[in-house]
Structures are given as C-alpha cells and as structure tokens.
Length: 263
Image 1: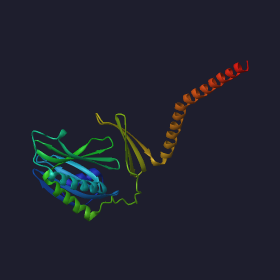
Image 2: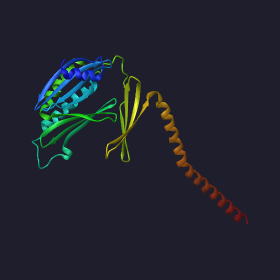
Image 3: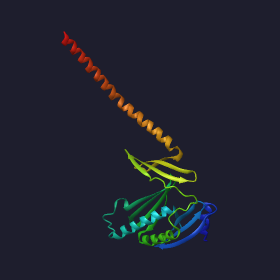
Image 4: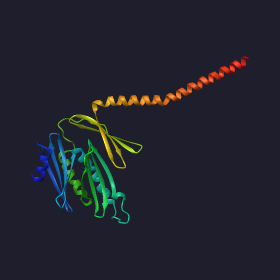
C-alpha cells in the first residue's frame, strides 16, 4: 500500500481495507479510483493529483458511483456530438451539460464545461452544508475513466454492502415556493431513517436544513394537518358570516314587505 493510501486510511479511522485500485493518466493529471471497505460497507474514493502534486478527493457509496458511471456515459456521448469550440459564441457560464446525483446526505453536481483551456467534466461533492470538494477531468478522458469505473463496479457490485439489509427508501422530492427551493431528502444512517428538509435560495445558494427522525414524521404530519385545517376555517369563516348576514337581511326585508301587504 502506498503512503498516499495509508495516510487516507488513517484519516478515516481504523478498519479500512483496500479492495482494488485503478490509476489513470489524462494530460498532466493522475486519477486514482479505489474500492475500499469499512465497517459500514464498500465505497469508492476518487483522487485527482495535479502536476504540482495538489490533491482533490471525492468519496462515493457504490450506488452513487453507479449513478456517476451512468451519467458519464451520457456525458461522453454528448461530448462526442459537439463540434469544435467556438470562441466567438461560448456557452452561458461555460456549461455544456449538467446533472445532479442525490445519495443520502450527499449531493454530486456534474458539469460538462468549456473554457479557454478546453472542455472538461467537473464533479463537485457537498455533504449537508459542509465545504464543497471537487475534481476536474479533461473531456478526452471521459471514456477511459468511465470504463475503469465500470470494471470496478462489475467486480464489486453497485450495492453499498452494509451488514444490515437496507430498506427501500422513498424518492427524494422537491418543490419551489415563490423564490425559494425546498428539498425533501430521505436518508439512512446508524441512527435510523430520517428526512432532511433544506431551504435553498437560488440567487446565492444559501442553505438551511433541519433533520427529522422517521419516528417523528407522523407527529409533524398531524401538526401540519391541524394548521392546514385551522387556516381553512379562518379563510372560510368571514365568507360564512357574510352569507348569514345576507340571509338575515333578506329575511328582514321579506318580513317588512309582508307587513306592508297586510296593511
């Protein structure tokens, strides 16, 4: 095991076992794709090492790595269909194609971009509100990287491999309300199943989140339902009062006309 790998394993704590590794060289960069295993199961670590020795790393569950592999197939096909770069008409924000992978409490942002140095795939990882980490892969290496990742997934599978059988969780949801985005992400950790509700302001990407344990969902639902019912009552009450007043006024007017007829 190399010093690089030994240092990474120590930083994750004891009990990390390396199962396989692949190394790629694309232009002036090297990429390491490692399959590792700890007490929670198998996972993939991707490291980018630049010409100066600087390192960037991503960590993915096996299922997230499978999603990355599938998207890289789409990105490589899209890249193959692109014509030569046009400096006079660059894409907006430099983006040619984008995708997002959501896996438990992690998000992976995939952006095929173009700048004055060429085209490349940027993969960014965020965990909750933590600092974003990212790697950049020259577009010429997309197919080679995807093939290496596919070989590892074919050998070790796409299941996360935890000791306990993981329940099938509901799909994540998203709604937009006025100028804010709300994400409902369902996850699972050693404490159990949870829902993370995140509010994101599109303009500055400022994010606030709360985490609700699964055992409390029914109580939250009951409270929300109670507030919805009360607001319906508040909104309909003035209308009902006006209708009753109109009926009383019509009845009084009718009684008055009846009295005049008798006279």
